[in-house]
Length: 62
Image 1 (spheres, one colour):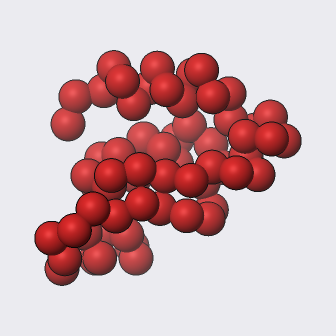
Image 2: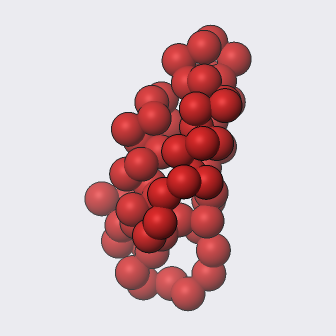
Image 3: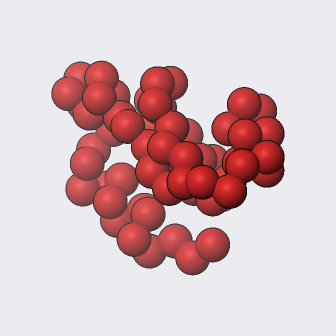
């Protein structure tokens, strides 16, 4: 809800940071039109595969 509300109120690029723990989270953030997402812990613990995440955002049309 925070990122959705923020993206509707400002005209700047928003990068989500924190709470990104799955490919589903990335899909959700992308659907909101966010510029990017930081996925630190999810990447280095193996919860998100970087190759799959990149394929997801590169192949998705908004």
